[in-house]
Image (cartoon, rainbow, N blue to C red):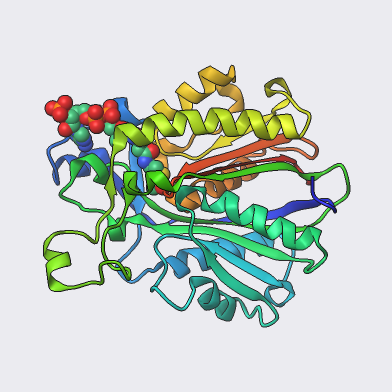
Length: 330
Ligand code: ACO
């Protein structure tokens, strides 16, 4: 429980225009629309234009979120960008965004927690606000996984898409806002999902490029098993902490990696499909953007009303996981 009620007061998305369908992928690697749909639930994903970087999509999402909250850029005091594909290793993408938004007073940093990044960042920002340090925070999940995807590796390239999503956080009236949260990590699984080269362990060199070590490496079946368990356990724990049960949840928004992961976790939790937001069919796995994109879609589709109980849950590289329960604030 936070010391002060903090909630989300606006959301927005930045989605590239270019659509890459499963049929397009059939022309690129040995795969089929049928395989991708039945194994993942994905039909298409969006791919950023060559001139776009993570901060460009993040900016679009941020502007829309601020607009929906009725807040000007210079009112923002904290910007956190969750990403594993920053524009460059440094400075932080959040700083680039701070400049473009004219958020002159804002502290700005990036946060790396893979696909759990949006939830890690919400929790971080909410605690800064609850402590009274700031009044207005902007959280963005943004990734261009297309830039670190090996387009010759069919076991990964069919899964990912590009996108960004933002949320504005402010103090709200009790009992609205964040009710409880869970964050977790298990670094022993680091190499289940990682990018081998380009960091200090293995700096970018001709040999690392030739060995294709600047692309995502993933052990899909292990991540699958971890994900189902992580969603179930994190959801039960976060609800218990909020003194709520699965029956109290109005909308469940899981990380959108694979519809089979969502279905398996939902079955274990006893959650019916009507209460789950699924959009992986249209965007694939957008990493740190995924939970925020789904949340923004729910808001814009009118699926959330003031007082509704929303569960956000994510899992990803690290390995990491996180969940939040909110009573929707508007
Ligand atoms: N098209 C056709 N065949 C394929 C493809 C493809 N795109 N990809 C793999 N195959 C083949 C494999 O080669 C294998 O063939 P074989 O049996 O002859 O060896 C067969 O399909 C089965 O492969 P599996 O990997 O066992 O397939 P599985 O049913 O486990 O599905 C998948 C693979 C979709 C990757 C699944 O394991 C998964 O979703 N895992 C979780 C991934 C995930 O959530 N990652 C994101 C984490 S979040 C983050 O931080 C980015």
